[in-house]
Length: 481
Image (cartoon, rainbow, N blue to C red):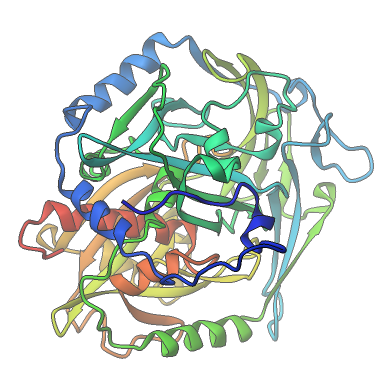
């Protein structure tokens, strides 16, 4: 077993006077082997994954939870700032709804304005791992979020903004937080800053962490230990594994089964850098009251054509949450999204067709995203040549070519029933050519895994699909996705 001794604070990574540290291998191969064992362990200390959806539904029924729509002016502690019209909390913390102006270089009328969530805090999405009966398990939380379909889904061990875990709300503390703030309590398997939805957030990042402990961990109500195999099984069920869990699972340090790809890693990184340097999208915050094309009434802020999303208010009774009652705004998308990877094999190696997606709210503007990432209703009024590339190929794919499909919701703490149809689709060469259009690139699953271990290379939808790819890989015993 690898030594778990680690510094108790970041500064101790670079010790002062004293014995010189001894060099060690830069890459730790141990976790990959144990992750692979966990991914094949269909039974764990929580014996059957099949019973988890019913347990979550039962918790939702009997947990004392309720979510009701309320007028925006009825939000307790929230108000529209007199000068800007921004929707802000009285504490000055949590988040605010502001305006965003986006412009595309060298085009006339190529920009737009919209409401956006500004949340400058970096939250923690943390999974606690521990070997139980010789198999690596992950501590999942049956967590209620007001925007979740079904209310209760499987979240990471810790899913908290800085305002929450510093208890700005004056509620209860966040269970198990100490494993992610005190390095002496465990061994870090992965730790990276990742973006959230660049269409709805402005420069939002969360710390995605997996920490392994050897200590005894008290099992609190609402938490359960699951193997990776069990989590992969649950990823095939609609709206069970929440967005934050999927994001963290995607960042796990799996070993690359096949280190070959149609592009070298250097060539791929160069292509991404080129896309970032030529994207031509500029964005900045603006007062919400000045945003054009959107109208505020008693119940919502909505687009003139009733597309994209609405900003709405909810009153929440949270049962066993840190705070039992609160109100807040949520973004409510109009329509169900389609999020898909087209997949091909080159020399037997599985590749996905990724797109360099420019989103106005991303810190670096461009990250690798799915082949298709859109809400079709938003494009229904446009002619075929202005539809998103490859959308028709995904929607018309024969059932035999669909390797994965599930309805998965986005983060329920900010979005109300924001669901996407997530798909992995085998594509013939005539549909997804060897030389794809500008802005698209073939990336192996191993390269996706490597990029997910670094900050801001894969957007949140691509990270979900990476977790789903692994789930599909496990389900197909012949290793064909």
